[in-house]
Image (cartoon, rainbow, N blue to C red; front, side, top):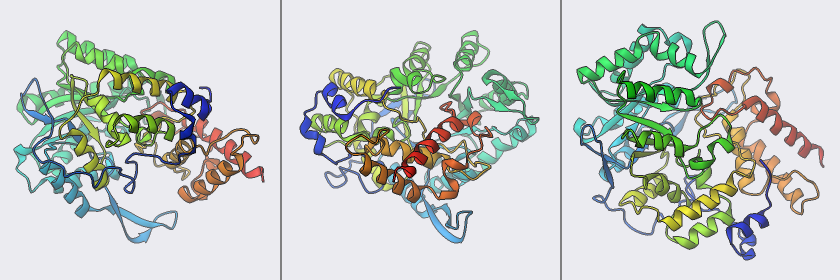
Length: 476
C-alpha cells in the first residue's frame, strides 16, 4: 500500500486546507472523548429492531458484544509488575441494565472472551431479567487441539449453559471458521482441515444440530474469518440440505465492503459475504463495524467531512449506520466497554437513520483513501495472545495505527514534522507498551499468526515496526 500525504488526502476528499491546522479527532474510541454525551436524553422506546425470519422474534439492531468487559485492579501484580485486573462485575451489571432499559436484547459472548470469564460475567448481569426478554449468543470456541475431542467440545458447550445460567442458547455459533491452526503434533492445518478437525470429524456439528432439534439451541450459525473456501463450503452444505444455517456472523464495515482484500489479501470483501447470505435469505450478524476501533478514530481531515454533514453525530456512528442500513442485517455488534460507548450507540439506533445514497458515496470515497495508508488491520481481539515471549501484540499494533491517524508516523527525516512525530511515537510507545513487551522481543516463533482472524502476518509486521522504532531511536 502506498503512502499518501495529508494535503493530497484533503484534496481528494474535497476539504479545504484550513482543516490542516485542526488537531481534533472526533469519535468514541475511549471513555473520555464521546462527542454527544450531554446533547439529548436517550429515549427508552425508540430502539430499531429486525425480525428473525425463522422465529419472527424482534432482535435489537444494536447488539452487545461482550468481548471487552470493563476491568478493575485487584491486589497482586502481573508479569509487568502492574496491578492484576479482573472484570468489574458492578460496571458490567450497570451496562447491561442500561442497555436492556433502552431496548438492547442481543448479547454476544464466547468461552474465549475476557480470558474465559465473559460468559460468567454476562450470565450474572443478565440473571435479574426475565429469560424471554433477551437473546444470548455464544460460541463453540474449541480452538485448541485439546478441545477437539468430542467429549471436550461437549463439555465446553455445557459449561457455557452453566456460566450463562440458562437452559438454552438463542444463537449458537461455530466460532471463527476459516482460520488455520496446528494440531497436537504441531502440523499446520489449512482452513478446511481445521474445520473438519474442530466440527466434522468429532461429530460436534451433528451434536449441535441435535441440540437445535431438541430446542436447547434456537438458532445455529457460524462466524467467519479467513479462508473463503470454508465460507463457500458451509453455504454449499446449506444449499444441499446437509445442514441449515439460521444466521452467519461476518466482519463488515464501510472499509471492508470493497477493500478487505486490499487491507489483507487473505480476507474477503464484505460485499461478497453479505451478498451470498442475502441471496439465500440467511440473516447476517455484523462484527467489527469499527474495524477494531479504527473507524472511530479517523484522521481529522476525514472527520471534518463527516462532522460537516452530521454535526451532532459521532464519527463512530457513521460506521454503525453504514452496516445497519443493509436490509439483511439482523444485528450489529459493538463491544461497549464504557457507558459513553453505550450511550453514543443508543443514540444512533434509537431510532436508526439509514445512510442515504449520498452518504454511502462519501464513505466509499473515504474508504478508498483509507486503505492507501499503511494501517495494520488488527481488531484487538486478543486471539494471538498470550505470546510465549511476552509481547503485547495488540498494544503494539494499536499504538502504530494510532500514530498513523494522528500523523505521528513518518518515514523520512526530511518531513517538516519529523522531529515532533518521532518524539510522539517513541514517548507514546514506551507509555503504552512496556519495554519487555515491545516488538524487538519477537523471535518469529509463528505461534500467533494462525490464530489471527485478519490473517495478518504478525511476525513480519512486528519486525517492520521494530525496524522503524530502531531508526527513530538512532535519529537523535
